[in-house]
Length: 294
Length: 294
DNA sequence: TAACATTACGTTAGCCGTAACGATA
DNA sequence: TATCGTTACGGCTAACGTAATGTTA
Image 1 (cartoon, chains in turn orange, purple, yellow, green):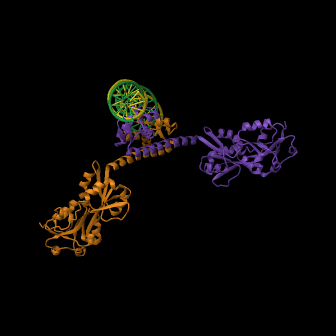
Image 2 (cartoon, rainbow over the protein chains, first blue to last red; image 1 turned 135 degrees about the horizontal axis):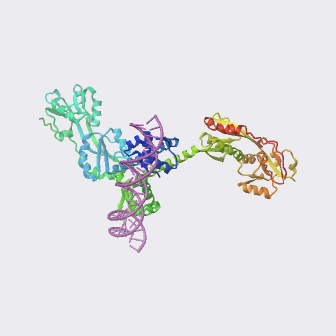
Image 3 (cartoon, rainbow over the protein chains, first blue to last red; image 1 turned 180 degrees about the vertical axis):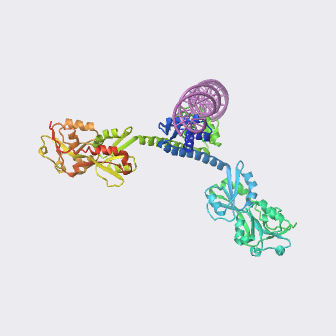
């Protein structure tokens, strides 16, 4: 058994070419490195260097040894990385969602029902959500349709209706509802981080209709500073988000309505039963929103 | 970077189940092992064990870690093995031969022409000789036919004629030469370690004809203690080996004559030029042997 | 009480840095 | 003289063993 500090020093020398440079990289003295290299040769019972007065270089065996040493160090590092990441995965619930809103809604419940666990959430595409569930890089996922996969347990837990908030003075402002078709001539502000809603709007409208903002801050500022229309939703309205000087009108198309499903692998269902139970009674439809015009 | 002595101790524990047993295996004290395991956890920043009063076992992360630790140690051992064997291969000329006699003949030349190198010789089958040349586990090989492979250089360097040494009183003893056919009713002593000659005789005669001795000592003793016929060769006869009370008669079949070729990869030919040159002038046909009956 | 793990403490092996020396360009 | 490697010496870290303590079956 040869200790890794020797291999590390050896590989550093192999890459630097001189003991002096390598000792600098390693933050040790040259004599120390010189001794280590001697020790390595002694432990292997093999000559690794070609030495002549104040010159040292790898011999043929040394080059072979350097390659194997790199591999051995690689295996060591791999162990460290995998063990740490495995340990972390045991203490963490990874959750992926097709949209940000249901995550905000779910977070407090998760924190409460999964004590001692870190909750790690991210927005991802439908494809990534499903494959992530299957390969266990997500323990939970929020989907906007039931994939109809027997190995995946799905429970409806939230509804969301897309609205458009439009200037009071605009012709459409008087309508009870609109369709995407009605919006063809508008330029509409949209937060770029709303998951699948971005895809829906890109599909139902043309790129020219959408003023997509990559940050929520930029989005908010433009809402304040302009009278441009913006996408809104029943959930935001229910939470009292009424952008000033606009009326919020639901979009009638089916595509503008989402049902969110909380899902996990059937095999892990019981681990998260408490979460599913807590969300079941809590279903928020977000219908019947009043327009609070400010 | 985690030092291998920690991994070694960790794996020992994983295999023994208790610190006490593992410390015994490792020839260290329990407290030392206990400390090491704590240190390993600390360096990884991860809990590896399930501890309760005077009981310790791997937790889930620990089992994963043990598997990775085994791999890391494996990579280390692999490095040691490969480096040592590579170094050895640089100082050694490995030679394979289809028969023992040409090796004996070649050995002094090799020792002289390859100064500082260890010569390692073995008898092997034709198939193994060729594949060994190609994959460089043999640098030189002695074949009894030219394989006609462009990548292999071949030089004729020795002839050998198979003889039978038979009791003076036997009917065949008066013949100038015999054939395998003539030997069908004999039981003939044969050294079992004469490479391809064993195959030749097994093919030309039946198993019942051959009294094959696995050791040369046993063979010699039976030659002395009996008047049984035995296989002999021009090379042995040339060296003065005349078994008592027998006449040696050449076997006329083509199969009873061998031409030996010294070979190496064409790409390595110049390394061994000196050997090829030394053997070229030295060709021994071994013909015209006189029968010295004692 | 036997088996096992942990804690406490003193010892020592071995790794490191500084200093001095040797060789080359 | 500047650069680079090796040898010599002394210091200090840290791994080790012994002894003592604590817990369970």
